[in-house]
Image (tube, rainbow, N blue to C red; front, side, top):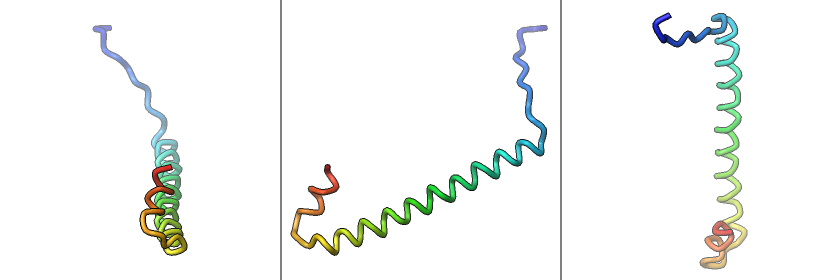
Length: 59
């Protein structure tokens, strides 16, 4: 050969299955991000002391 790199691809059906799994995981991650926002807002309502919320999130 002339130094070219050969990359073998999976069957299109398998590629689509992989994409489907990745998309499903992406949706889960996005849902978790939304839950985090919801719980952060709830915590900020429960801890009304000024400046205390920032200290909680700074860890």
